[in-house]
Image (tube, rainbow, N blue to C red; front, side, top):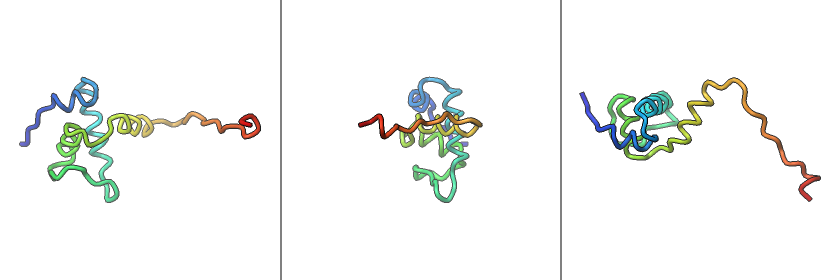
Length: 87
């Protein structure tokens, strides 16, 4: 069984082991033909995701947004700027 140190990965996600596991699981589920792993290690998906987080190859903020938006049903409305008021 492969072993990696989670201390560096935990620091990269903000200090929570729960957050580390949630981010790694989300990253592992996002692998596809278009979204290839960024590390040269080809272990199981979870270990590869942990290695990416530990190396700092993925943005934890973007990954967190992906987690939130996956389960969101209602998206906040983005108000467009009124061209008449901008002048």
